[in-house]
Length: 206
Image (cartoon, rainbow, N blue to C red; front, side, top):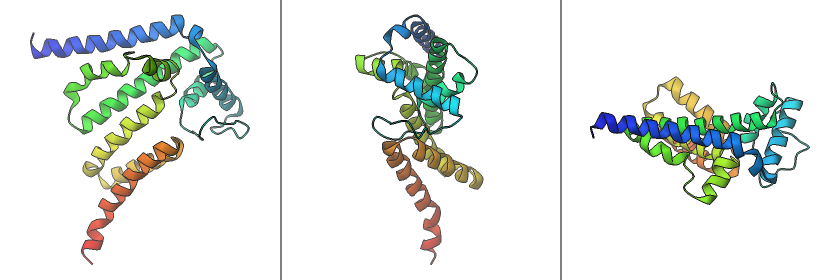
């Protein structure tokens, strides 16, 4: 099999996996809903109704998370009323965010040729835990996406323009604040490293 056919087959497998997962969520997603999934959807409904990102009256289970799946829910709740449709559309958006973040990371690492085949494993239920918490409940899909974007920005930063570096630092600060304590630690380490690279020449000349 030629290299071109292999790449084409990998893209077809990725498309089939995405379509299969989306159809599965449409057919069975509502019957597999638990309290965690329901609470995130309710939080998204409240965020849409109050036109807010943080709900002061809401008691978060583990940590304050501004950027999470409930934001995607809240966007669809603004113009849709079918909870099942909102669930499937939010799932598809989450999968696309993971895939786009993964592609961005590989692009900055100059490894895009491995994207089609390796990306299949992002949306393939290869274990019960991954399927339940990432693909079904979407509880960690946002954090995985943030991790990919963060790593991609780490490789992008040295090659970015001055304006681009400022934008990257601002985006990382937003992700650090909105992703929760663990994401704050990861993004904070990148911001500190980037700042060190930025100001090191100034101090080395003095």
